[in-house]
Length: 427
Ligand SMILES: NC(=O)c1ccc[n+]([C@@H]2O[C@H](COP(=O)([O-])OP(=O)(O)OC[C@H]3O[C@@H](n4cnc5c(N)ncnc54)[C@H](O)[C@@H]3O)[C@@H](O)[C@H]2O)c1
Image 1 (cartoon, rainbow, N blue to C red):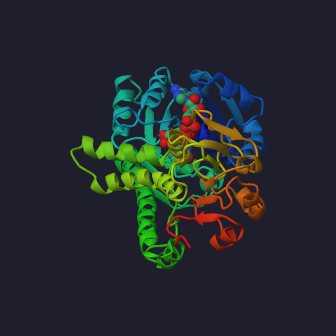
Image 2 (cartoon, helix red, strand yellow):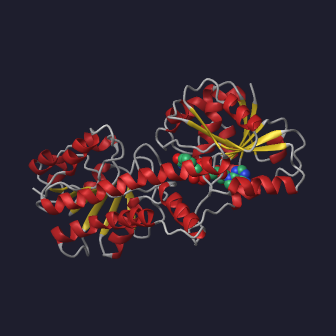
């Protein structure tokens, strides 16, 4: 069994740490936020991720938490980097947290491998290698081991991945990282460091492309009377295409897709290439979020003074993450149009959008409304008595925009809602 240090106690770092501990490794997690480390030491999980709390608890004796780099590095054979890489104003990935970690290793005397879990631009590994070498840290290896887990299912995704990607400069380092994963049954893709970095960016870009593709198909369905749900089913059963990521909706969000698409676009542009397809994917996604406003205006005219419920705020169900969530754009646009916005989510908070009132229950959100927008497909929305909810609305026939095609159109219309979905005929 190995000793692993994980830098970054966020969505990726905590899941990585918990899963490695569950494989039997001894794991120390380092972060710079004292409150985060204190919470973890007290047995609290600072993020919402199903299964994570239980796994941390079960493996408590193999997990420790620290604010001290030296304590994390001491005796560690692997130095996992799982810090954030948010976008800068230019759209490039901000690697300052990565560099802080790399620079903090200056005193590391024992051999170890720095393993990059954070999503970074192609070329980062080479730069880290140079920086380590310049500091006389030739005994520290480097590997890229990008993460493909999705929030909400991250623990399962880590334990049962489609593949494990490992890129390293030295075969011995790649072998060591592969050995660390013994116990996980998945194909291992060995690549050079640049290709491993690109696999992560390309995989995200492929998923985003499918989302924007089906959303554009949905928009054409709306204009032509076809139903995108049936279309996606028929298209997805083609084995060459497959059914995943063919759900039309109000666009992708989250902490990864938007920033990683920008980072790849910038990476291409910085290398002299204009990535036309990716630019279109990004633009389609931006427009998709705003189409909801058009749908509401078509039904209600001006939105000034209209009370509108936003159902779901997280960028997807089973997470409290609202980074780049479509709800933020929607809430901002609705407030700008003068609407009175009531927002509900079981775990996510939207305190940042001025003028939005967050309520605790779905009932409160739906009281006395003119319209509701289903933004995140939380299972609790299946439990709502929609007929009763419609009877409590201000409008006689309240408008319902189902931004995720979650509910049954016929039932919703029979329940008294002027129901609209994405890419499905209005009646
Ligand atoms: N969130 C996901 O589902 C996901 C999936 C795949 C890849 N990724 C990538 O993984 C990386 C981490 O993402 P995340 O969502 O876990 O981020 P996050 O913001 O949830 O967590 C990052 C953590 O790193 C800590 N940190 C910052 N600087 C540090 C330092 N110098 N030393 C130690 N800790 C430090 C922060 O305090 C924070 O707790 C990003 O590059 C992201 O693109 C994320």
